Image 1 (cartoon, rainbow, N blue to C red):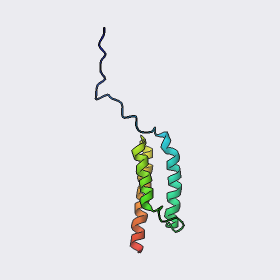
Image 2: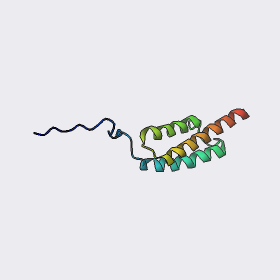
Image 3: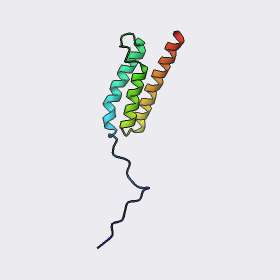
Image 4: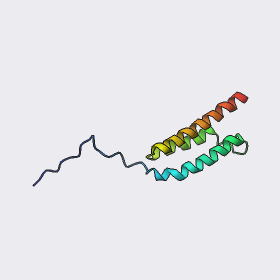
Length: 94
């Protein structure tokens, strides 16, 4: 009987609990469209519960649940910066 060699911890595969990166593409396209609309309209046509905090939570969820490629991570970073910039601009005007 031959012994089965255990895989090395260093070469272990990443956890499979995250979705593949292709699952994030449609969400990112949607969020890019909606967030740009919200920022341009300054949220006037959006309900109160769809504020910057809501959109930031959506971005965090994508990051948490999906194995992102670098280009997708850059898109999320750009959207986050756009939201935070909009929020700080709104606070300056108030």
